[in-house]
Image (cartoon, rainbow, N blue to C red; front, side, top):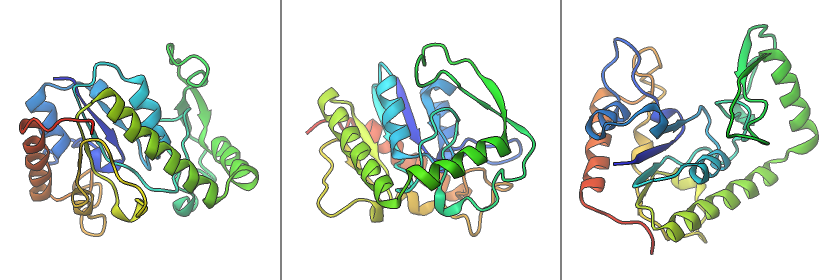
Length: 224
């Protein structure tokens, strides 16, 4: 089965010494590879749309819709949350890898390196001149609508796991299954990354895996 998982930090796999996360359980059951996981910290809705449309042969999709204010950073393997940036990378002299050609020619994703504080300066300039929360909210909604329409048109079976407070009352999914409860099981207050990389308790990781497998095995289909 070509099962693809899209989402934010709740989709992280276990680190050495940690108990299996729900994604690890899905990887084992369905013989998945790293190409089946489209993960990014603070994953924006635009990132989900971007990689969903670039992914072929999807038999089933699981989408964890991310924060409504995240900024899509196509050249990195992570996005930025303007409400939670703090001092991230401000004085960081270490380098991070980025994809200088991902926008123009993503068929050949060559990595280069850039200092983190240089990237943070560019981000700060972007937010200063090209960003407002209203704009980002509009971009979130535009991407959400396109994701739903794309899945419906392609008749791709999908499980949507959004934050309910991010979905406006006037919007209704036309594709797949919607579960608003799973994302609530991520518990950063009690499960730090050293204990569980996705900040979900071992018990709740098993619960999430069972719920998702149940949806998949029931044969729930995409489209209207």
